Length: 354
Image 1: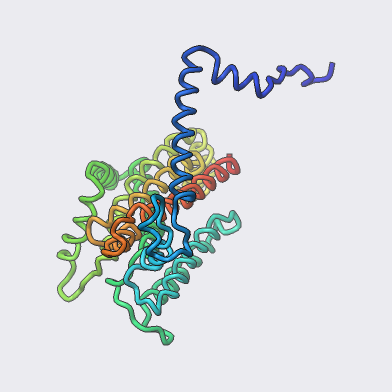
Image 2 (image 1 turned 135 degrees about the horizontal axis):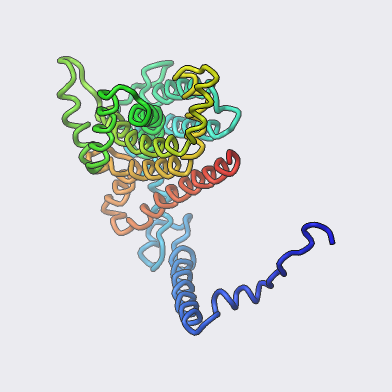
């Protein structure tokens, strides 16, 4: 008999469904109840979204006569939701700036860019984003940072906050786990535990109101910049703990093997220890990325107009004040789609590197 010819018999789909969903009276009852609930939810969702909704091309007055979603509201206000109070005639710059950041994230996911070229890429992207949004160069009109709203602000705070927070978190993890200097290790421990021990909104308030007071006289920081600094401080502590877990999981023999080859601390960490630690902590790191990305929406509390705030602007209009659900549904679809893409990439990267 050939090797591998003895295999467990395959169970048919009908038998699997019967054993998993209707294996006992309790399972049957739960299956029926959940099936009815799911069917009812799908029915009401389809009815509200499509059957009883006003078509996107319908006039605005038709929304008052329907019981479902008002899609003319989304058609009328989508530019306000996405770009806020950025000058209407210049919103093509906000669009290009958003596309630039999204494209940079997509390119960064390619394994061929996981090298020194990534730093050059993000340096160029940061400059391009700033020039497009601010203007004042190459014939572009100047736009005050106070008028940067909506999707570009969300992407800027989330992406650049994570880009700067991750290396800071790696340094903090190395300082806490491997540093031989007690002062540096104590500083890393104090910083990580202090930041992780307070809510994010407190860090945002400190960054917005306290950090400007610490600047030398004559130097002012914009609210967007101070918010980003606060986000970097906050998220770096969580990255540090994720990476520290990976460092602890690297076998001691790897350290000894690197020492036996005469590698210095920097070479050993950069070439041997840190790559393995990052690979082992990949699920925790991506979980931190997803949480940080969604937590960026909290900046609306301190007056930063991200996409959540611009969605509220859209239905604050007295003519559309009853259609907040449609505005938040659009925002929810954006978060769901982007988080699903990040989660899928995380699973692919983990399978590729394992």
